[in-house]
Length: 281
Image 1 (tube, helix red, strand yellow):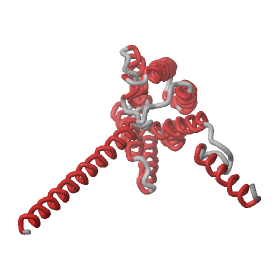
Image 2: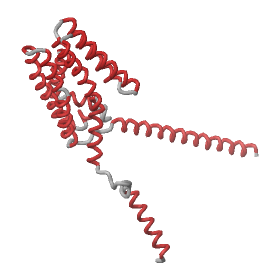
Image 3: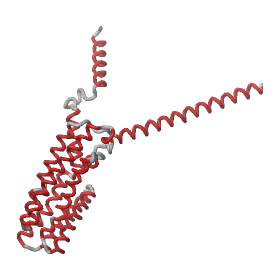
C-alpha cells in the first residue's frame, strides 16, 4: 500500500470511529452518562424549587421582619418593610423575566402573614401561615408516599419530562420518589416539631430568629438527600420525546401515504391516456 493510500485508509478508520462514538475526540473527552444525569438532576431540583434565589427570597423578608421587630417592637413597621421587600424582589424577577410562580408566591405568603400579625396584634402570627404550610406539606409528603403516589414525583415528573410515567413504567424510579418523599416529610415535620413549641411558649423574637435559622439548611439537606436517591435510581422516561417522535412518525407516514396516492393517480392518468391513444389509432 502506497503512503497516500495508507493515509486515506487511516483517515477513513478515524472517521468511522468518530461516527461510532461521537463524544470520542471531542474537547474534554467523552462525557460520562452518570455525570450528565447528576447535572440534570441538580438543575431540575433548582428549577422546581426556585434555586438559590428562591431560597433567598423566601428567607430575607422574614429576616427583615424579625430584625425590625427586635429593634422597633412595631408590628406595623416590620410588616410593611417585609411586604415592601418581597414586592421589590418579585418586581426584579418580573423585570428579568424570571419564574412568575416564585415571584407572586413570595409576595402573597409575606402579605398574608403580615396582615394576620397586624390584625391579631401578635407578631408571632407573622410566621403562623408559613408554619402551617410547612406542617401540611410534611404530612402531604408522608401520606402520599404511604398511598403509593409520592408528592415529589408529581413535582419533579414534569421537570424531568417524564410526567407520571414513573408510576406504571418505571417502578425503580417510583420507589426512589417514595423514599425521597419520606425524606422531605421527615425533615419538614421535624422542623414543625421544633418551631410550634416556640410559637406557643416562646416570644416573637425567638420564633423569628429560629425560623430564619431553619430556613435554608433543612431545604439544602432535603435537596442533597433527594439528589443522592434519584441519581442512583433508573433514569426518567422522556415521554415528551416519545410523543414528539410519534408525531414525526405519523407525519412521515401521512406524507408517504400522500406520495403513494399521488403516484397511483399519476399512473392511472398515464394508463387512461395510453388507452385513449390506442382507441384513437
